[in-house]
Amino acid sequence: MTGNLLDLLLPPRGPASDRIYGVVVGIVTNNQDPDGLGRVKLRFPWLSDDVESEWARIAVLMAGPERGSYFLPEVEDEVLVAFEQGDVRFPFVLGALWNGKDKPPESNQDGENNKRLIKSRSGHIVRLDDTDGGEKIEILDKSGKNSLVIDTAANTLTLKADSDIVLESAQGKVVIKGQSIEIQSTAQDIKIESSANLDVKGGAQTNIKGSLVNIN
Image (cartoon, rainbow, N blue to C red; front, side, top):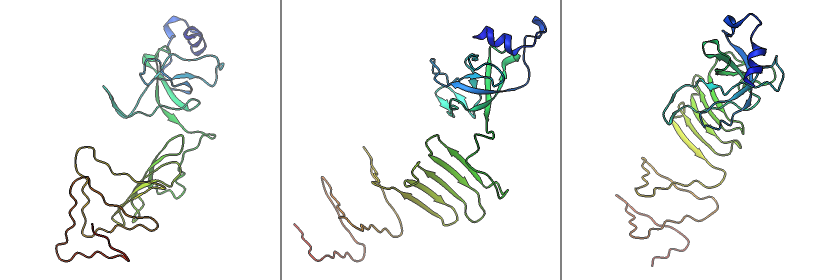
């Protein structure tokens, strides 16, 4: 439909003016690029819905061979569009736009502008909070029950899971160090097992307590 798009977008002023400079608003219609180049197709609100652009490249934070920031807009997202050298056959997306229907995930109602946030379609969140005295970095899944929180104010790192937490090293060691280490189980057993040797050592005193202690 390139010809239709060309005819509809360009004003009837002759071949010398067959270019559009400046920017326009577009709506994403397709983000499944058959060549895997991270491009999208667009429609334009003032034209018929069956008029679709050529594949449009997306301006991102960083792009290079097998590296870069990868955030494709969703179908029906509103974006800001420009054309290479004004040629409507070569559109590219400058960025995404919120509007009266699609609102941002944060409102900044206090005017302090303390929060930076990435929120995915399903609700996963990466949040940077610069609130004075409450600085933190949060990673949360869509349920909010599984999270990693780096709390600068409290000087803590908290990892929470609604179910299991697994630490695994295929080849090397898992090292846990601290001035004091405490392991508690509120409902179930604690099991420590080694396929080879297991050493338990206390630099001062080693206490093993239980209603029944078996050593075999």
